Image 1: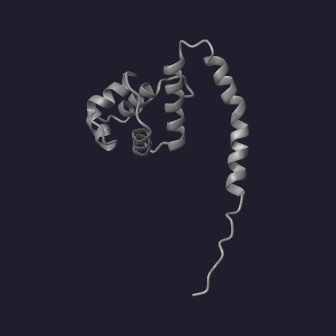
Image 2 (image 1 turned 180 degrees about the horizontal axis):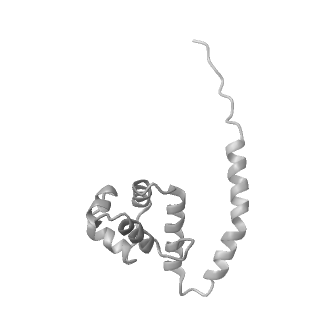
Image 3 (image 1 turned 120 degrees about the horizontal axis):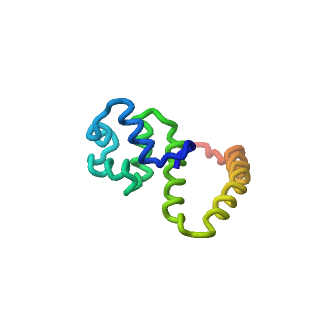
Length: 119
């Protein structure tokens, strides 16, 4: 789900219709058929990560934001009836800062020096 509570499918439909684009045009830009895009917009399917990247690029949206919305939607669909889902979401939120710190530390670390050989 997106920050405003819309499903990723509803968000896509709003973007497409707001720009007056036919389903087939957007589907072609994402290398899918219009039937699949229709299923995504009606929330009966989720786009793959690759399709999400293509849709984000087509609509000039931040790729990470679109993928985050797709992952959140996937989590919700797979766990909506699980009583532990709320706690799982809380644990994810708690671990986000830890993940960011670890990721930052990994990217800051210097790559090991490679020994050069004289040729």
